[in-house]
Image (cartoon, rainbow, N blue to C red; front, side):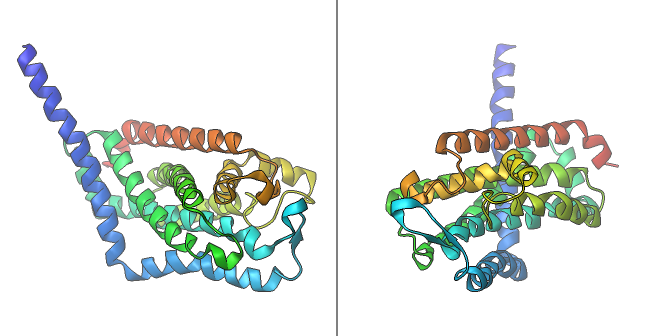
Length: 278
């Protein structure tokens, strides 16, 4: 009996990793083959960053003490990175609704694999794509006046992985509950886009209305953007205390948000499979 239990455990473990790897690989291959999606996800945030920077760079100045004034292109650069992560989370997790309509998702759910593996494989695939694209864009940080050392690049890369994982898990959780792509777009416009704009990505909380500052402080993405910004500068002096969020609180909230959303996604995938299979 012990032998049979051992064999059962040895078979379930490869099944978990095989499911994760297969869904991760499918996500990457699917992205590469969709050239329009590649161009849209890669170019939309940088174009917005350049246009907004050209319009506001001369009128926007944020004092930061001995480190000198911060111009808009520099301030909004971490926000552009966060935008890449968010847009990838939106464009990729909407495929969950399409997979349900085409029957692929039902096929995955009836296969002998863990529901957690389905979530983790999908989320890791999107996180990989989002981080790679943001890492490429990060190379032009000197254009915004930010010199990156190897340590700051590595720290920013790690920060983007955490933020991308949390945003993708959120997108998965929302998309799993949606019946149509129109419903997902409605939630995106109502929740996800305001999360980005009210995160300090494009304007600081200082000088805003008090209620808006409170909303930004409660927004988990505020801490993700702050974590990316902190990783780029690696010290508060150069960063100038732009958002008043410390590195460790930003890291703690970002990790907690990622873990919470991943847990909720796994819970939804486990409890609501019967509805999806209908």
